[in-house]
Length: 42
Image (cartoon, rainbow, N blue to C red):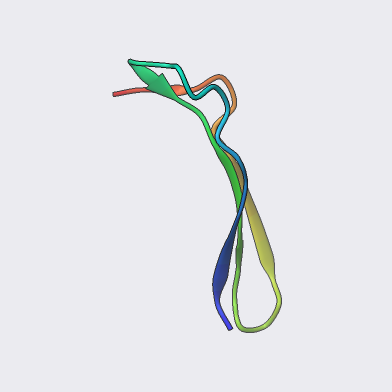
């Protein structure tokens, strides 16, 4: 089963940036961790 595991959202009060950390798991139980670190401007 493919799934996404959310580890955290960083600071909830940020207006112009966001940061998050999550793990993607595929059907072969391989994992990819994504961490945007300091945040991304949009």
